[in-house]
Amino acid sequence: MKPLFLIFASLAYPALTATAQYIDPEAEDADSVSVEQAVPEPEPSATEEPKPALNSDQLQKRWNRKKCWNIGYSVPTLERRDGTFMDWEADYAVSVKNVRSLYFHKKPLGGMVKIGLDYSLLDITYSKLQLKHIEGVAAGEDTSLPSDPSAPSVSDGFDEIVSEDPSGSILDLLGFNLGMHKLDQTFSVGPRITVNPIDHLMVGVYFHGGFTASGILENDNFSYGFGHTLASGLCVSYKVIGVGFEYLWGKVKYNQIDFEEMEIDGNNFSYSEMFSSESFSLKHKGPRFYVSFRF
Image (tube, rainbow, N blue to C red):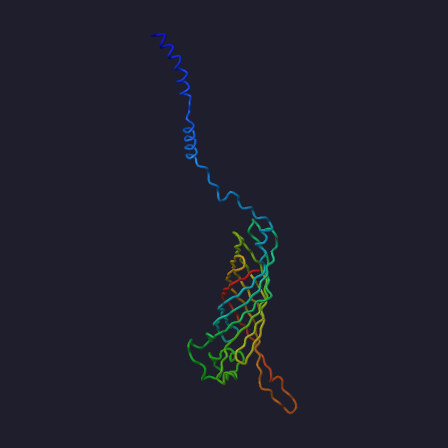
C-alpha cells in the first residue's frame, strides 16, 4: 500500500502545483478595474494657465487719460464787506471745466503713485443769485418801498447799494425784475497727486489757484471784475467716468457801470453824465460737485 500511495502522490503533485499558480484573467481584470476606480484621475484645473503679468506699456495705458471734462453743480455764497454788509446765496450754479494733467515722472512711485500738475484754460460757471441779507434790514422785512429814500431795498438789493440810486432801475420801476446773474471764467493751475490702487481705478487730490474774470447783471446794471479763486478737491474715476468734490473760495473786485441820461448843452455832449462807475468787492465760497469724463 505504501508504494501505491507514493506513486499516487508523485502523480498528483504537479497538477496541484499548476492549479495553485493559475490566475483567472477575468479576476485580474476585475481587480485592476476596481483599483482604477478607487483612485480617480485628477480633474483639469480651470486656472491651469495663469494670466500673464502686465507689461510696462499696458500699465502706462492706465495713466494715459490726462484730459477731462467736468460738469458741475454748486451752491456758492457771496458777501460784501467794503460798504453796506450784504449777503447772497445761489439758487443754483452750473459749471463746465476742462482740465489737463502733466506728470513729473513716467514710472509710478511704488507702482501706483504719480505726482503732477493740473492746468485749466476753461472753467465757466453761471450762477443765479438771490439776496439774503442787508445790514440794518431784518430778515423777511419788506423794504421794496422804504420810507427813507436812502434805505436799501431787499427786492432790488444790489444796484441801489452800489450805485447809490434809491429810485431803483428802470426795469424795476416798470415792474420787471430779472434777478441777479453772475458769470465767471477762471484760469487755474496747481499740483495733483494721483493713486492707482487697483486695475483702472484712479484717486486724485489736488489744489488749484487761478485768475478769475467775472460779470454780474442785475436788470439794467452791469458789473465786471477781476480777482482770484482757490480750489481744493478730490476725484475718483474708473476708466472714462468719474465723480468729484471740491471747495472753492476767493475774492473779486468789481466795477459797476451806470448809463445815465446824456445832457445836451448846445452842440456839446456831457459824457461825464453819460457814464459812471462804482467799485466794490465780493468774496465767494462754496462746495462744487461734478461728474468727470476722462480721455
